[in-house]
Image (cartoon, rainbow, N blue to C red; front, side):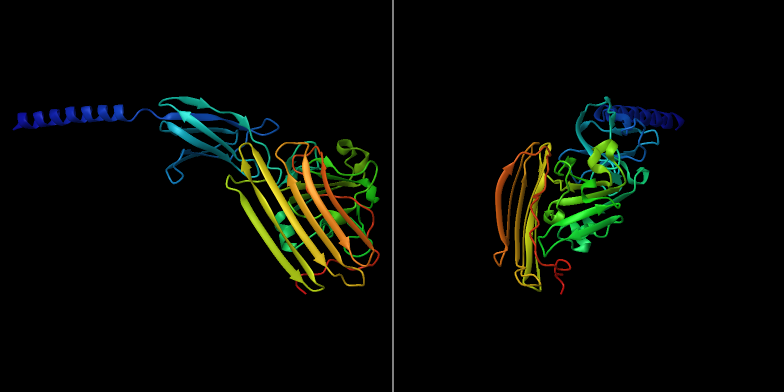
Length: 362
């Protein structure tokens, strides 16, 4: 009896050893991924979520880890080809496709840049992007969500609510609009579009023709910024950030609205990602009869930024009835910015005063 039990135990032990040995052969050792994530100052970034998923299996298992306060992370996954993502707002999300062999150890150390379009990031106030709460200059950030909630059409419509700004308008819709920032003259404000100045040399910008088409973010910096932007920035800086495509599948949106005084407006936007490039295009149309005689106004804008720097194609047409003025433009210009919205500076056009753009809810 005892001999039989001993033989059974030895047999079970032998089978277990063989089973574990075969399982070890069938399950090769995991691959290891590690590294350090740093910011622009060289310091470690904690709280970055690192996820790995087998490529081509969007609904498959996900392996994840979180970086420590010093920016270090470590992740072990079975061998295979993985889509690895590093994500933590307000930093730009980074993606990699890695082939990890059994038992291999890969070290990936790199810098995460701040997302320039994030509402918690200040790009204009300092030489390098920084967190808005760490900015040394008074700053106002206007996001796309705020623009939508205010139902603003032109740039002056939304800047009216920013502190430290006074505005002067002449005539009806389409007339000259000047911005006086922080108590300074209109030519003391530097205006940038994606980092490119649009001020005439030593002059002011006519804000009446700056629409919010294709604009995702506006930063208003109050106070002298001449050390960074030159003598034009005595009172402060206003910078516009254009929309950037974020999806591999192109996105398309359209809108239309109308109201009293025969006011109508419509437009659309098209954006996406193509390889290492992002693209975005927008067009809009505005027409109103105005509140007074000869206040008819029509405006059409088309913006087609290209992928590479130094080129932007745009077209614009304005018309006012009553023989007051008529002006049209079809142009192609070279500009140093990758994404430049449709902008045009022109003479004061309106002769009649009106309070504001007609509300579409009247």
